[in-house]
Length: 507
Image (cartoon, rainbow, N blue to C red; front, side, top):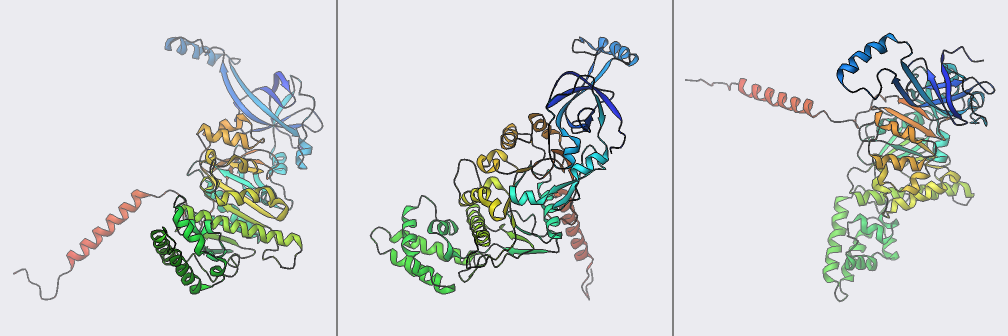
């Protein structure tokens, strides 16, 4: 039984099964939910366009004096203002409460009453108490209504979090990590800018990226030690040196054998200089990336813990190296999850689903460029549902993300973005977001988002809950830090001037 709600307006003009316009008694906000009094139990709708017009103050006003006089006329005429709202029909209210969207086949007749949706109606739809739902915030236009998302759908259908810089992407990821941590889920977060390394999560496992170079293909290893793709002679030397026999060596034996093999390859005519450069690059990489390149690491997944939020710090890596690391872990995670479903002789390390998060997705899965991460992210996007490996991609530049992978993200969290190219990419990637909703992205404030897709029952304007204990990720307060530094210098200066050595006399 619905609680009594306030009558808001009346359907006017031409109505369609999926859209109606109504005349309202007050201005209405885009993102408000309304109930139309027709069908079995009422029909829920979302206001996607709103307008206010005045009969006296129309577009034909020619000068200020006319506008001033017309304003007085408008103020005295109760019928002067028109408040219209265009409503997207979402489905029968009772069906939506059960998680099913059924659009009425017949449109609402003009004259149908439109009322405000009650908090009770909205809570049953947006904040289900059923298994798999976690709370992320509240409805932007109805703050008393909590909003939940279905984390099972994120793992099985994937998620894209898209917005301009500083609009709250990292906060939403942090919120998801906290909620998943509370239910002892397993996440792997590739932390490209150290946004999550110091996140206050009790059930977390922080680690620097580590890979075994012996497990890499020659081209991947070349990327890690920073051999350029057009350096054909150096690549030839590395192919000759990076043999299966060398790969079987462990720890220092591997590195020494690789250096010797690269030096030996220089005996080929025309490859002496390339050989010397490859040797230098191998030794330099061994020194600079000793914490990352571990030839004795038997199981690359051993560092990732079941039931924890695993945060892999990539901040010290170049873009090319980070790409190899992310692709390496994605490949290993996918292969491990396949073992869990195949019933093979080798037990998988992860017996339950895993959720992987790629920050700066436009770097790792770019449009118009092939990368190792892009290849394996595409495989996860296609196959992850079957094997229990979910993917979350996060970016401030949707226009630069591979469109095929983005289109496979079954759920979206979209925050403020003003670039039309970004908006067009988002619109093309999701059928759940109408053109009208996309146009509202420019009006969102920091921390506000449109959630759409399979992780919510209906598209929703949401204020995302702010995560407490986030130590990094926000904008730096440069002025405050400069002031602190100046104060520290001043205090040090005063301290040195006040110090008078024993026995000192100005005479």
